[in-house]
Amino acid sequence: MRKNAFLLFAICLAANPALANSADRQQVAAIVDEAFGSLMRKHQVPGLAVAVTIGGKHHFFNYGVASLETREPVTEHTIFEIGSVSKTFTATLGGYALAMGKLSLEDKPSLYVAELAGSAVDQATLLNLATYTAGGLPLQFPQGVDNDRDAISYIAAWKPEAEPGTVRRYSNPSIGLFGHLTAEALGGDFADLLETQIFRRLALTHTFVRVPEDSMASYAWGYDADGRAVRVNPGAFDEEAYGVKSSAADMISFIDANLHPERLDPIMREAVTATHKGYFEVGEMIQGLGWEQFPFPLTLERLRAGNSRTMAFESNPATPAQYDAHSSHAVLYSKTGSTNGFGAYATFVPEAELGVVMLANMNIFMPDRLEAMHQALEALAELAK
Image 1 (cartoon, helix red, strand yellow):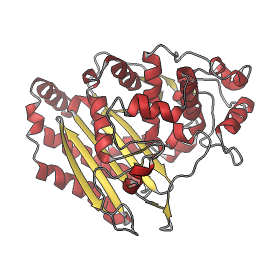
Image 2 (cartoon, rainbow, N blue to C red):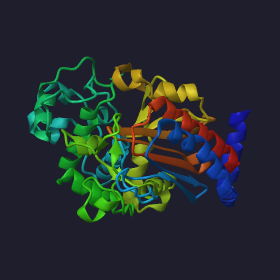
Image 3 (spheres, rainbow, N blue to C red):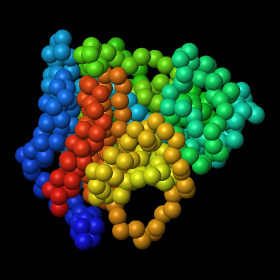
Image 4 (cartoon, rainbow, N blue to C red):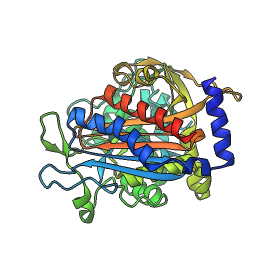
């Protein structure tokens, strides 16, 4: 019954977008404060920015400070490290290369990096790398692999634990290599391509891989478990896997682009929609390019299962995603991210015209982060009706 009611709401919303615009800011604020304000207070997070898009209308809620030293308040333009939410941008650059005809997801890695010819990873495809299904590449590079050249050498010698496409093991080296190969296919530097071909085309003015000097004053400090001020350190394929810094205003604009790719120019429309296809069923979720997918509404238990330590640190069986053209559920697209001093969460439901972004300058305990987002999504979906 709840699914049918939700679908009826989605149909009505599509016919009359003004319904969603009636959502009262005070009600949205109460929902956000109950979910995320409580999360911040519980974990004593120095600063937090939340952005909501509902029916095309944006709401921003800012808490605390960007720096404990300067006491500069958080705004919707404060720049946070978004950690692995960066992978959704890497996927979008891959979609851009697809739209430009520069690569195919069925290509082998050695087509772009000759050093990988004859290696085990060359049995995998670019799709396998982008979906962590190349055969068990680890979560992180081992100690001593400090730059991209070291990364290529490590991967060339790597021995898989399974056949490509049979297990998903969440991996920075895997999607990092995908991003590196995408840049090779486009004939440029990864960070430059992301900033000029993706951020600029999406009009994201406070989003960077390498924060320029004139924007450093807006770049928040993160805080580690001991309360020390930190920012992300460079590493092998760091830009591709977890290197983006962005603001709540820009991230909710990125969510809007994902909610309405039809409003983008043809190349960017293809780039964004390429990230919406799900490829592998893995436990409680479907793995796409960057985004992880769940049926919506969903239980907190299912959301936690899809983001569990088992999913993050272990290999899990993967099977090709099967789509039912008559499926009765909406789809939640979701991605969490963290660095040592920051925590992020971005999610959206196209059928509900709903998206939420949370950016924090502390790596908040994941189960609590999931609970806060789930609570907010359920309440906002009800409000939008």
